[in-house]
Every structure is written in C-alpha cells, then in structure tokens.
Image 1 (cartoon, rainbow, N blue to C red):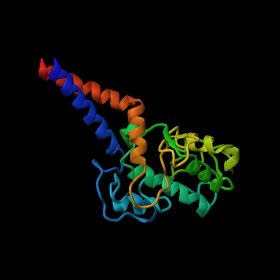
Image 2: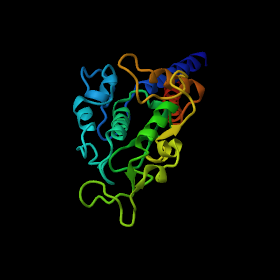
Image 3: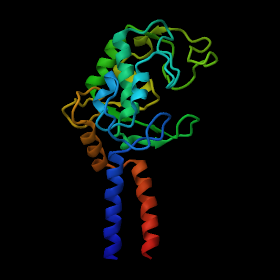
Image 4: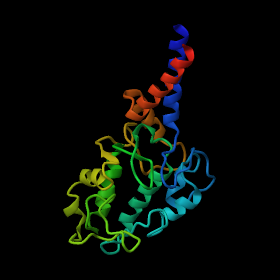
Length: 239
C-alpha cells in the first residue's frame, strides 16, 4: 500500500512538471519545447525555450501571413502601435512553453487544443487597449464569424466598422472577448508573479514562476485528467 501511495505521488509530481514545460497541440506548434537559437524580432525573448520555430516567428510579423491568413487591416490600415500588440500576442501564443495550466482540448479543424482564461498582467492588457483604441474593427470575437470567401478574413455582411472603443469599451472587454476568453483580465502587475506577461526582456522567462503558482494553487482540468489517467494505469500495474 505504501509503495502504491509513493508511486502515485511521483506520478502527480511528474504530471505537474510536464504542465510547466509543454506545447499545445496547435497548427504550428512544435511537439516539445526547446531552444531555437534565434527567433524573429518581438518573439526573440522565447528563444531559449520555445514552442515555435524561427520561420513561424518571422511570419508572425507579416500581414496576412500563411500562419492563419488573418487580415489585421479588415477595417482600414491598423496603426503600427496597435499591430505591435497583436504581433506580441501571436509570439506569446505560438512560443510560450508555460501555458500548461490553461490548455484545454477543443473540437476544431485546425487545432486540437486551445488556451482558456490565461491571466494577463494588467499593464499588458491596458497598454494593448490604449494603443488600439483609435483603430477600427467590425467584430467583438475575432475567432469566428468572418467572411473567408476571399481566402482571408473580411467583415461579414452587415457588420459595420467601428472604433475599437465602441466594440471594446474597456481593456477587460477587449482582452477577454477578442479571442473568445483565451485571456483573462487581472488587476495583478508584473511584479506579482500571479499574471502572465506578453512583454518581457530577453533572459529568464518570468511566466514559468506564474505557471508554478497556478499549478500549486489549484490543478486545472487538464492536469486532473492526466493524473487520473496515469493513476489508473499505475493502479492496474500494482494490483
């Protein structure tokens, strides 16, 4: 009985460690995170341990790149100040190896997993909204509902281009709604170790410590499922 308890504890620790350093099953993600040597411009801070490859990060900086054929200029030319945040958002999504606590399975034609309710630092969310509030869009949820007949996203019939602040009256509404709750607005600052940073300098990735905090606080559904599966196998082997 003691052996079984000890082995189950080891399984729990191993599963948690995997969640701290993993890549989601997405369209362009690597299977496992690792060093890339050199990543392009804004994605460079992830180069020591990344879920993205160099060519992915270069495409992340291009308009209507082959990554998702997404047109940032669907309501006129997006300002450079605003676009920098969407590029950084793409780097964060494609490259981050510490999103395990928020990865969920998804029934989609282009990916098998997504992130849900990743807690963003207040500064990153507020600055993103401030730098985009004079730009224009026609949709609240950018994940779905576009007209793709041209091969890239265009506003659906009847949708009106409006100022960002009309679609997203607050920073919270933009950060949480624009990618269907991939992100969660928080009041935590970057020094709290309780929120994920999109923007950080090259060096140690501060988001690993944040992921550890949330893993220790309360296991996510993904972790619980992994532990249940591994525990079931181990229990059967120890019978």
